[in-house]
Image (cartoon, rainbow, N blue to C red; front, side, top):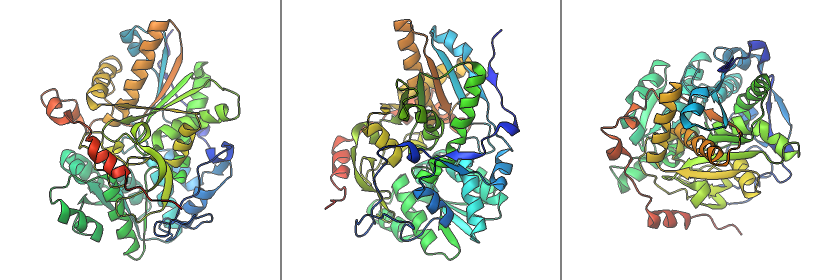
Length: 454
C-alpha cells in the first residue's frame, strides 16, 4: 500500500540547530571590512548591525546550538512540516526514481522563511530593540519577518524590490496585515535609494539595492537593527530544522537520498535541507551523496560568476564575503523568481561547491515553469517560481534515471507555495514575462568591479 506523506509529531521537532562549519575542514574565509577590506577575524562585525546573539552564532564553531523554548513554541504553529513521496509525479515521468519532497509551504507566510524570522525576532526582542529593517525580493522574506515581528511586538520596515512590489501586490498586503511597513526599492527614503533613482528613475531594483537601503535605515534609526533572510551563517543555521526533520522522515520511509536538491538565491532553503545530510558526506559516511544547488540564469552567481570577495550590497555598506558573485552592481532581469535575484551566494555553500562537495546548476524561467506545470498536474501543489528551479532539476535527474534504469532516491525542498505568483503560470502572459536574455557585457562589467584584495 502506497504511503504518500510522512508526518512527525511536535515532540519529534529538533531541539538544536546544526552548524555545518564544525564539520568543514576548510570553512569559508573570514569576512572583510567594507571600507578597509581588512580581515574581520573576531566578532562583532563593525558596525554591529545584527543583534549580538546572532553575531555570536555567525562566528560559532559549535556543531549544535540549542533552539530556545520561546522559538520552538512559535515554530510548533506549523512544524514539523510534512515530507511527501511524489508517487503520482513518478508515474507521470515514468521513472524508476523515488522522489520525495519536504513541503515548507505550510507555514503562515507560505514558505520556509519563518524558520529564521522567528529566531531573529526573538533575539531582537531579548536585546530590547524597537524594530528591524530588512529587504525582500519576491516578498516571502518580508512576509515572514512581518509575521514574526508581530508575534514579538517589533516594528518591521521592509524595502521590497520594485519590480516585485509591482508584480506581487498581495505580498505587500500580507506584510501590512501583520503590521509591516513596506516601500518599493529603490526608494527616496535613503541616500542609497536616491542615488540609484538619480541614475535610473525607472529602476526595477535589485536585492543588492534593497539591502543597502535596509542597512542604511537600520544604522540611522535608534532602536533598529538589520535583519537578513539568507546568505549568512546564522540564517542557514536556523533553517537546518528542515533537514533534521527530513532525516527522521526518510528513516520512516526506509530510504536515504542519493541526490539532494534545492533552489538557491542566497541559499537558505537549500542549505536548510542539504546541510544536515551533508554532514554524512563530510565525515565520509556517505561519500557518494550528491547535493545540487539550483539558480536562475537571470542571476547566475554559482555557474557564471567569480569565486571572489565581494560586497553583499550595492552601496558597499555591509561586510565583504568570499562567495560566488556576478558583482554587487549587477542588475538582474525582472523575472518572477524574485528570491533568486541576489548577486552572490552563501559563503558556506560556495566553499562546498569550490571544494567539490556540491554541484551548481542554472535554468531559464521557461524551463522551470514547464517543470512546475508538470509537478502541479501530477501532485496538485502549485509551487513558487523559486521552488520550480528545484522541481526542474529533480525532473531532469528523474528522467536520467529513466534513461539509465537506476532507481535513485531524490529529495528536494519545496520551499514555498506559488499562490501569489500565478502570473508566472499564466499562459497568456508567460512569453511576455519570461522573455529575457542575460546581457553579457553588463555581467562582465559588474564582475570587473569586484574589490581588489591585497
